[in-house]
Amino acid sequence: MVLVHWNQHKDLLETIDRFHRQSAPTRFVVVDNSSEADELAPLRAGIASRAADGISIELLEMAYNSGFGPGANAGIRRYLSDPERSEWVVLAPHDVDPGSDTLITMLDAAESEPMAALMCADVGDGMSPVIDPYFGGMVVPGSSVPGWETVGYPHGTLMMLRGIALNEIGLFDERFFSYCEEADLSIRARRDGWKVGLIRGAMVRNLNLGSSVWLVDYLQTRNTLLLVQEMSGWYHAFIRSCFTLAQISRGVRDESTRPPVFEVSARLAGMRDFALRRFGPPPDSDFPARRGLSTRISR
Image (cartoon, rainbow, N blue to C red; front, side, top):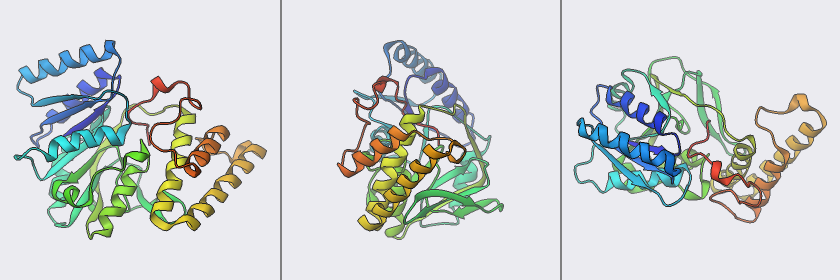
């Protein structure tokens, strides 16, 4: 299991304990995205104490906060290099709470899908993730039937990725930093004939919601345009850009039309950087509080 962490060692250690109590045997790779010293020291101590108690944990320390996708890739590469690896690798941020039988439920559901490459747990919203050629990742009302449900892409709260599929389709595109990387990976998987699913009834919660509105809106704007352009072409990305400008104009004129995440400067910066092909971490010039970036921004 790969857990991506940044500056929340208590949440991370509690997450390890919750997964260790699952009935599925789990080995952990913790990817620390360059936490502050006062967070890293207790993280190392907590991992060491759990290792002494027989929990298999490896800590990978990144040189800087590279974002969720690149951090996840570091842990997944470690998984892929293990000759004794399991068929599936589990991926999550540092602050999730799975149901008591979530991992087993997911693995059991995948038994009926031999071409399953990616699957996610159920966040309990009753919605299904889909990918639109103009709008990118979005959700629509989903199934209520327990078990495997084919979807466009998996939620990032708790995913399982099949090793043999990753060897074929590759890992997360690190240009995204965070947001849309799961959708991009799913598009590549489905193009190669693999399946992507959501496991209804395999429950999980993201415990700490919320982050910088500016950062979320910037990444969602920039990365959605990149996803649409890569998937559908420049014409579709142009139409998506026009829609974004219309949303900005309407939101400025009428505050009641604004979505929960809305920052004019963030959306304009995201459109600009997409046009300039500037991807990866957000630029310091636009977002000075760079040191406050989290490894995972709540979905």
